[in-house]
Image 1 (spheres, rainbow, N blue to C red):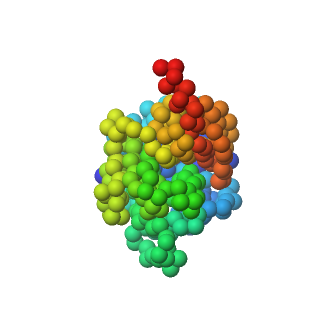
Image 2: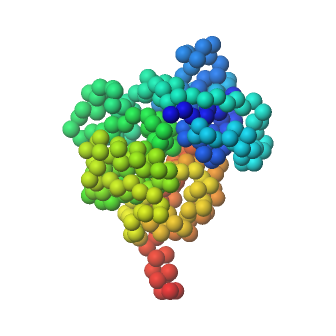
Length: 316
């Protein structure tokens, strides 16, 4: 199946804004490369290890869209989303699956998050440390659905889950992964001891990818993937939402309502500088809000106030 690829070059400082714009107008996947390398084969993918920061003069971004997407409409949407960015250098071409997926597969390595959590591609042998009895290993391949563990937003959420497991909080508890993508966070929660997980996404491909990854990891009976419209009612002791800041703002009421009194939430997909408004917004329902930063990205986490629920019940 072919795809429409949008490509452009930008400075490293501008990269997060371009990436956010590309994703907000529907990019299925965004790849970041070193634009200054002499040949494409020498380019390194800009998703470094935890704590590492590349030093690049320019970044080459490529974003995949459905093959029947209209390039002119995409440009119009991008200019409307962020008119201050320079979209004049954008180029388009049609590509096949293997053009981009093979590059991911060749470079995707096992990654560790926190004390126990490992994300390991299927085509890679299990590292010795990941073979330990208490390791929580999720096997994944890169795909169209976002979430392979390499992006800082996913890394921040995986570290949050690992910390919860280290404290014994996840054991046999339910988890809601809102905006599940590949299902990576829900799968990691289950591997870390959670009892059941619900993955919610508005992208049908993400739902299929999540369910497929659950089956391949032997967790198909404990993870349910569904759309926002078909998700089950109820509240959860743990909710994680790795989506964009604009969506977190829009869905604040919805996400807060899914967290049980005293339950915990983690929010990511937030660029540095966007956290202030979200802290104020979610402060209506949550206490002990904390901010964690990795590179240009932020995670907010906190605990649901029980008294807020009580107050609403009394008013009703």
